[in-house]
Image (cartoon, rainbow over all chains, first blue to last red; front, side, top):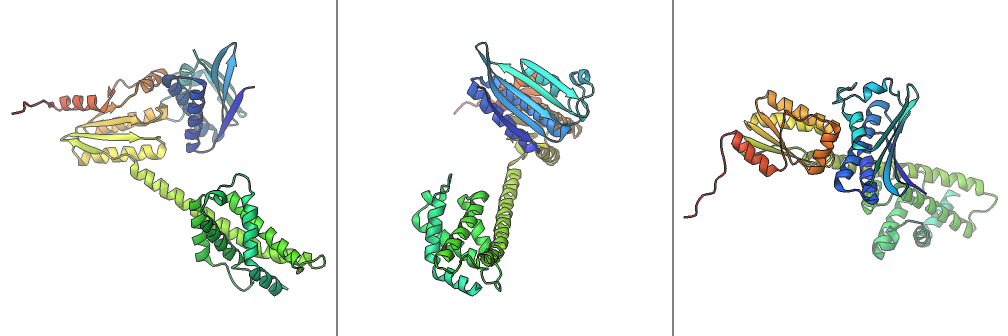
Length: 133
Length: 276
């Protein structure tokens, strides 16, 4: 039985709540400070994307285990406009909001597994995992 | 009939309060009635009962001073709004019970009483919840102001060197404040080197980095240099993983090292002098 908790993202402060939850869960899973910072930062990026582009959505955090390995799974889902060009979004330096454009490729580098499912007009679900080595 | 009800309630106030306290004590997750000293519970309950009965005569309005006083108190005691609502519910249940017991209310006039009591309790509930949320909003806005006062002041440390310690989460609003204070401070303090200390920033994501880069660019435009200090090892690693480019920056791990570098940039150093 996996354990999952979630934070709804409506305001900028919900981003703080989401990453606080992530940090606590990462700590409980047994991640060290560096990986805690990685996970927290990844959540921060994903939550901010929801806030900026979709307006509202949800961050779910789950402690997982697979073949004796333990880890943490982040699911960021929204029913926003979706991503029209996935390849571009994953390029460094591409941003539609005047930001640094490092968020999505950054999250991919921060985490071990990263998957985006997005349909324009329907929404986006991003799943990212980090394993305890 | 209303008069009969009012008289009965007023005469049996002690019993009502006692009954009500007993009911409130049974509420789940309730701490107030168990951990507060007895006399305080008694006093608060009496105030609550007084407030509840203040508009019982149709001619008298709710005393707004009393209302505000009371809500301010319960917010401070940490009553939740759910609990306040429950308190009002329980109070009307107790009153119902009493009227039934005294034989004032019976099957034939039940409908009338329900209406009278609803007319009495409903506006009261509205006012109490209204006052409660106003009190709560006031608390939040005060805290917001307090938080703003905490954030981002530029401190002149040496001639031409200033430090801005950043503590806590940086959101859009604070980022704006940081930028303003930074630029104003650089100009008024005639700083040549500014050290931005991020030791107290829990997460540096792309947005925070973006704001820092923008602030540094702006500082450069007003003729000073910006140095980023207080980069913890885990933050350094996440910045690298995110692929954030800080090549244009001088960065140091601690404020102390940053200060030495800043002194060197302004052609000075700290030397030990021999004791005489």
